[in-house]
Amino acid sequence: MSTQIVKTLDSVSAFLKRSHGLYIDGGWVASQAAGSLPVYDPASGERIATTADASAEDVDRAVRSAHRAFTSGVWSRRLPAERERILLRYADLLEQHGEELAQLETLEQGKSINIARAFEVGSTLNWMRYTAGLATKISGRTFDLSIPVPEGARYTAYTRKEPIGVVAGIVPWNFPLMIGMWKVMPALAAGCSIVIKPSEITPLTLMRMAELATDAGVPPGVFNLVTGSGQVCGQALTSHPLVSKISFTGSTATGKGIARSAADRLTRISLELGGKNPAIVLKDADPQQVVEGLLLGSFLNQGQVCAASSRIYIEAPIYDSLVAQFESAVKGMSVGQGMDPTTQINPVASKAQQLKIQGFLTNAREHNAELISGASGPDPQGYYIAPTLVLNPDEALHLTREEVFGPVLSLTRVADAEEALALANDSDYGLTASLWTTNLAAAMNLTPRIEAGTVWVNSHTLIDANMPFGGFKQSGTGRDFGVDWLDAFTETKSVCIRH
Ligand code: NAP
Image (cartoon, helix red, strand yellow):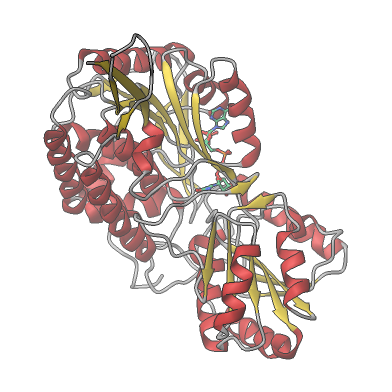
């Protein structure tokens, strides 16, 4: 066994062994349902923890608690500066417990401890502090009006941004801590209460963050957490009549179902959904930048990134040389458990995801696609997938159009930029894209024609709290991040005053 494996902290072992309930009204309570859900370590397939499998009644209790807290004004009417201070303290607590949370994330999700430390903890801290600051920047506008009646009357109006109410936050399993905080922080900064449901595959870090919220001073009921299945717990939460806003990140299929059910009550909804993100590489691109940038963009977190570059269109003159460089990089990647910081490719998050990716690769082989694979995982019980390139996939392959969400990257030779653009845009998705070129005019001409919510030039997958993020087409509705982020967690009220 490698001597590089990180030693599990005692606090992490103790947390895993606990008997876990639901976090309601500022503390743990037992679920009223009899069932429980296992959490597995993707590196070994071993069960490492057991969580509650919340029923619809449990969810009702959590939502009612959040609603009580909201209407009491204990948080929603608190001074913005006090909310900001408590949320900054919350970020400090994440920093203080950073190693513990990074280890928990690696153990439940499979990702590299390096990524857990740098992204799940490090980047999340940036997001938390940025969003805490938004609590004191909420503002409206004033308007001069032209209402002519009754004669002599004058009117002035202004808008107020008011917290929307109880938010239901639904989180996927690829970056549970970070994406969870992308829901909790704007909701709390705006003055809302939240009930959050992590994926049953990766609930642990958000469970720990629920406790830290209380330690930071978030009042009981303002942040409740329920664990359980999507079908029962998630469904009960998103269809609850006291929920005013759904913030969902996950697959397009689940997002569409939630949007249909939200339509019944016109519940406000933000959807951050899947992607099938293209990269267009022009012949004048810097090859080293391309290979480094797209290896990161494609294989970070085993490709389980909504923004991951998964199909690369390369102009013919540099295609062979780039393929050779990608091949050498992929064949040199070390594969192993996330707790070993020397490994580059780690297990995917679940057995189901492993089987799904294997299905895409079997389909490609059955159609005689040209595949190039790197090393496979060390433990046959772990959920490993060897990093794989697919050369010039044709339309018949499922992976050509569907989101694989794994360490699988297709490389396609194109005649010119126009062909690349047509192929890049030929997708139901429109989350992200990248363009690789040293020609400024080409960059400026092509970026407006790419159908995606984020387009990078000479980089991919790099996101920032101050840059809006969200999808075109079936990749979602609404935008996260940026100075306008809280708009999605507030209602705009116009106040019209006669004077
Ligand atoms: P998923 O299967 O859609 O699940 C997402 C969340 O929804 C999980 O918590 C799931 O719970 C829950 N859920 C499932 N069915 C539900 C229902 N009927 N009602 C309410 N909630 C329900 O997606 P995933 O496989 O976890 O995540 C991967 C997907 O997320 C990919 O498509 C990826 O592109 C997308 N994603 C998008 C972004 C973005 O910002 N655009 C970011 C990250 C990921 P259980 O897991 O417990 O069933």
